[in-house]
Length: 232
Image 1: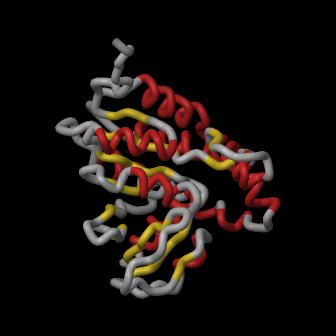
Image 2 (image 1 turned 120 degrees about the horizontal axis):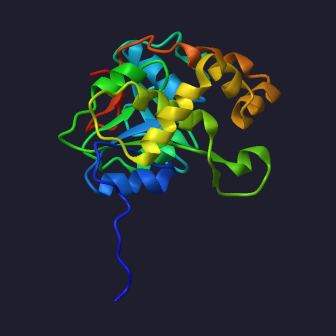
Image 3 (image 1 turned 45 degrees about the horizontal axis):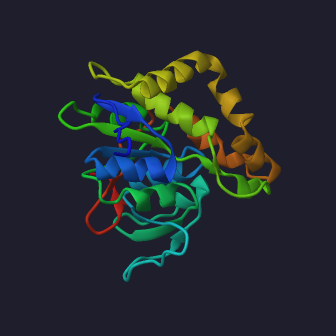
């Protein structure tokens, strides 16, 4: 008989990478927290703070009827949003992970801005898998496939570090330890990451600034049955 083994640990909080990790978590009935720090998660959270509804679109997905204008991944694109209005947001990484785990019991968006609020919503009655989305090599002209991204790992770790009295997987502990180790150097680490330097090279350095507002909001965007992320 073939070797069969379930890699998901018997804990309250686990951290796993990318689309495959998100899909596997949803298949197991986990709640999923999607972390794409630069820039998807931050922009969706900012939009939800302003009362907007956001439809995340992955590669090749078309917007449902009734959605309004398209946002860009730039956090500044949310400044003129109309509360209660639905918008679309396309993303190669964050939206692709959302598409992979839509069937999870609960899908939420996590970033530094809402990390304590996300952590407070995690309960021991159902396992939560936090998913750093990772990045694509193709975005920097280096072939295909995904690569681990330090910014998403640190974002996941920030959420784990804010939890209390929960059982953590080794991966969750490692992510939290890395966030704690960053300390006052967190901003420097993120700006000098591959993804941070890519944004600077594209003259999009201003998109990084809103990321560092740790615990600026209690808003935790949650995926509704209509496919929109909204503030509860």
